[in-house]
Image (cartoon, rainbow, N blue to C red; front, side, top):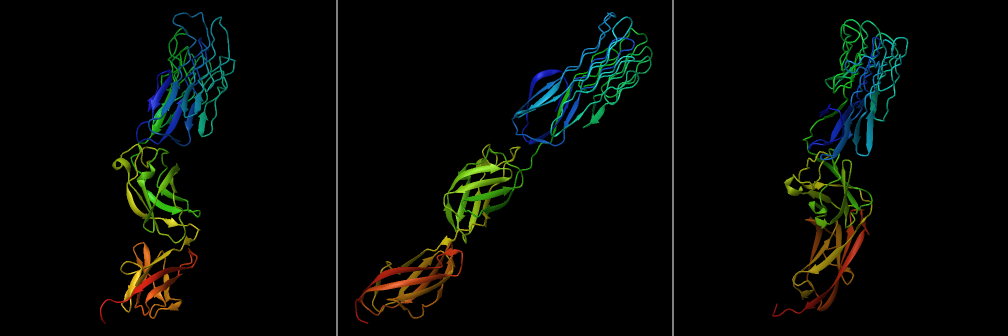
Length: 460
């Protein structure tokens, strides 16, 4: 995007799909001095960013393009013999920061009975008249930007870089301009010439005409070039260079840190702080849903706050459902509003250090507490981790049930023992579980039940 017309308070909205821009700012060119030995105008300061600015589509950038300085020659009035005026500044405001490129210095005026003077300081200095020095530089410097401008060290002859030429009677040319991003700009203006016109460099222009009363060519607008031979400088330039980003961020990994209270998702690109609601995420711990209560975004990561803290040894899975089917303002998205896709049951690295509480429950087959004298009943224990179970009745091991290995079933473990009661009335049954995983605490648990043993109905 290029802005070349002199203006102030202009705004530009960052287009959809743009997450970063490079910036080029050129001040307005200085005007050239009037007279047979008038100096050329200096080019505007050039500022260009060394790295891209991160931006958000829809954000507003404010800018101004500096007007070229007025030349010392006004129409047919040859009694003025004036200096050229400095070009106006160009500026860009991104967020809270403003970056300003200084306008080029005006050239010194000279001729007949008029004043004789030096060139003015600016982004690049204006050329001085015969026996008077050229202008120095007065540039701005910002972190992350390169600034370019040249002092006009000559009072006659050619300028340096984008500086204005000094006054002379023959072929006084402005300094060469700059070429960047396929654009040429910021050349110094040529001095007044009583002979053939001076050579043009970049946006600058040399003097022209066949007599001392003939003025030269103005600097080209939109280049920040200095004016030549008493003419105005060209308006400045603001350019934004960018690529439209259409690549969506992709999920790369997930981890529960040692504290266990959060789950951190990492994506392939920097993300927007405008993100998905907590309801778009599903986190399970050993198959049981853990509610997401908060969400935050930083760089490439989304951090989910969990209602139930994660402990060691739990299997953690995470799923994400893109709101609106992957085209929503409130979704996990990059700085260019490209939405991340839905994913399901992605494995999470569990680095939680807290040990998992060991839990167990016990029940009899049938209604859970009643058994029949000398009839087979199944005692079932459910626990939340692997290990072995020892079944006992009144503290004594039940034959064949001294060390039953718990089998994995879905999100829990189960062990069973077949028992034929040999005594009527109430019996005290216990199951002692010993975990084989050190991430559980405590490492053993006991489950108890009082079984009601009734007589059989009918004969054996």
